[in-house]
Every structure is written in C-alpha cells, then in structure tokens.
Image (cartoon, rainbow over all chains, first blue to last red; front, side, top):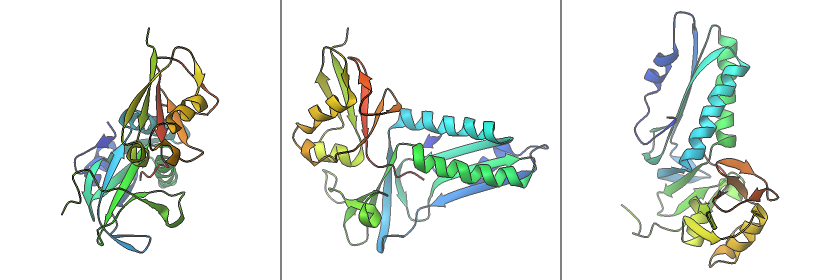
Length: 151
Length: 82
C-alpha cells in the first residue's frame, strides 16, 4: 500500500530497497511547510480517492522500473498532518547515481500529476482553503467542517 | 442488472454539493458529459467548474466517454498531492 495514515519513516523506506547491487540510493522527502501563498499554515489534511490513488501509485512505481533499472518505494500520507511532518517520500535505488536521481525526480513529478489526492490547509488566521494549483494564489476558500473550527 | 450509476465527489466538489456520493437513476449508457449535466442540476451543482477531471471505474476519462449502469464516475478537483 502506498497511502498511509501513519507517520512515514523515509530512512527505513530507503533501507527496504538498498541491496548489495543497488549502490546508489536517492530519497525525496516532502514535509509540511509552515507557509503557502504568503499565509501561515497551522496544519493540513490530505484526502484521497483511495482505490484510484493506490492504482496510480502502483503504476508510477512500475513504470519507473521499466524506464530505469531501479527499485522504487513510494508512500503518501493521508489524514491530518502538522507542520514538519512527512507528507510524501520517494526512495529510489539504482546501481549508479544517474538513474536513481532521474527516476526519483520523475516519480515525485508523476505523483503530483496523476494521483488523486487533495490538500485542505488550515491557516493561523483561522481560515481554511483547498490547495488548487490551477487557481490564482494556489488555493480556493473552503468551508469549515460541519463540527466547526477545531482548536 | 444495476439501474443507476454512482457518482463520487471529492474535496471541494463534495463540499459544494454537500455529499460525497450520489446515485443517479440511469437505464442506459450515457456520456460522462451527460452525467456532469445531471450533477450540475442538483443543489450546489451550478458552482462546479465547466471543465472537470473525471474518472470512470478508477481510470481518467474524457467527457465523451460512455458510462453504463453499475459504473462508478468520480469528479476530481485539481490534484494537490505531493
């Protein structure tokens, strides 16, 4: 499974694919930032169309292995995350560094392009927005959850 | 034989419609575009954008693709993973 609601340990992810043959390991780790579009981010929530997201992640991992002679591990968080927590991690191991760097960059770009995951940001000023890379400012105002703003 | 299609709404689109799943009665195959037109007529549906990313049975689909009773159509807001 590539989606998880548990904290992601990027180091152990890389350890799963490093072997005697695969000497070059590259990891990309995306952490929750404390700012977006000039606003101070307090926390965020990732939601997903889980079955499609799992399928898309599996395809990306498989395609990376077809394009380059590499082993790939990919994890993406769902649920509520605080600033600094790991949102996404990609680990790629190749015999040499070139294919590991190239494949790692490709995998994270494809995740952003293809995987149905959405991000709801809670700001320090009490507002909430859906992150939308196609919108001016990169976000669209959201409604508060039905239970009202949480502390 | 199923006589409806399930429409799944996510993130902002679910917020706009106040629902994350809608079953549309449907006796025969129609296009994804026809499904979107039906959803737009529901309360809150007029706020949906003109162009939306869609999936049918977990695969990205175009508005001219056909859907049949029993299929699952998902309306996907702009992706924001990673």
